[in-house]
Image (cartoon, rainbow, N blue to C red):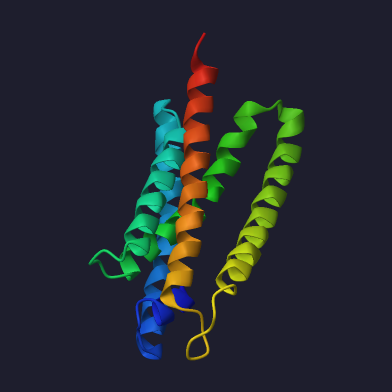
Amino acid sequence: AGPWLTHVAGLDHASVVNNLLVIGIALALGAAGLGWFTDRLKARGSDREIVLVAIAGASLTAMVVLVLQLPVSPVIPWSIIAVAGAATTVSYAILPSYFAVSMSARANAALNLLHLLTAFGMQAAIGAFIDQWPKTNGHPPAEAYQAALGCVAVLQALALTWFVVARRRCSVP
């Protein structure tokens, strides 16, 4: 979010720092809130996977707002994206219900590895993608960041569609 806030939103250093603080607080509160909300859904017998679908949809919407540079303070969509980053913890709570008790720890360990490797791979790919643009004033142009985030949004839309379609297929008797 820092380079976006600087190079796309054009914020000064102090504003970037303040925005990053707000985004960090949103991440922390979002993690706690998602955990609380997911526990309430489980207690009611509701489908907890809906939390993942909802937060992925909100994150996707936030990315589109940023890419299209809609007239919204960038701290709002970046905070939504930060909360979505915390939603990975929800997957750890859900995954054991898909596996035998004897396998659930291994499944969560594999999921953790998948999360870490995917995060690393995506960050490296985004950086390499952005670096393909010629630098202006020592950094890539705003269009490079927008194009990279747009590609991530497309990938997320495809993943979300796959998740929803697969869930529907699995729930059909």
